Length: 311
Image 1: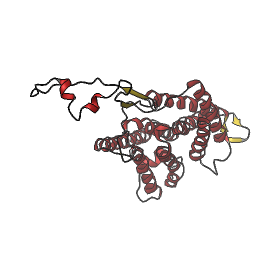
Image 2 (image 1 turned 60 degrees about the vertical axis):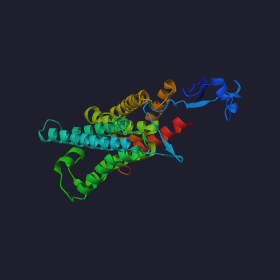
Image 3 (image 1 turned 180 degrees about the vertical axis):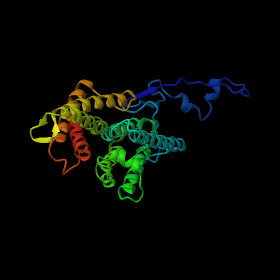
Image 4 (image 1 turned 30 degrees about the horizontal axis):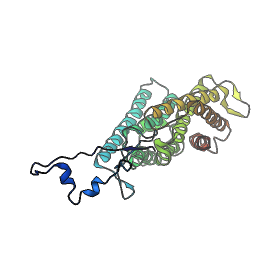
């Protein structure tokens, strides 16, 4: 943080009711102390220079060392939550409608929801305020979806459209596995890392963009299987690395352009490539029956990205 100093000129205005000169007036007590100021000891006003990783619109009023959440910030965050929830509901409803009309296959619909919902959630982060409570408001969106998955997963309420959109075999209990892990990761990224760290950006990019595209490409063109895992294909793994890397870089650039990151791009590209490779290797391992990809991929990516960007 850079400290700038400014020396204001000494301006003396003569009151209209004084007949004496300004200098004579200032020589009367208690003003001699003011005139004794030497040029070498200027009156200083301090200005704080904004750090490069803080958005230009950021404002952090402080009282007794704790940030204050203004009413405007609460309103902004509440509106943002409503907008993102509406967008998420509209996304699932759209693909539900497309699946119901047989315009798109259920498996493709499920993966497109997998890809787009997480990325849309992450892209929406800048519309939240700069208050410290913004991340908690943002996490309400996946929390609502988490409750929805629990309610329908335990068959407390039926929703055939949701089940068809996000499950493989149309079984409500599937909502309590992959889809539930998915929204838990969204909550974790928002609460722990938020938009202040590239770790969450890369983790969600690999889980949504990388793993999502890998499944689509692997099902269509994955005839050549990985030797140590016949359930995974070479095309799928290559697609995960390529698209995970591209989506990660694109999202990092998005947040960097908005002022949240200040990255050294040659070094960043190398680190993102390394993290993408680690996540791709983990996704290709025959452990899906033990640990769901929606947990293994983002958690591995978080650890790799954290170590890579903090060393």
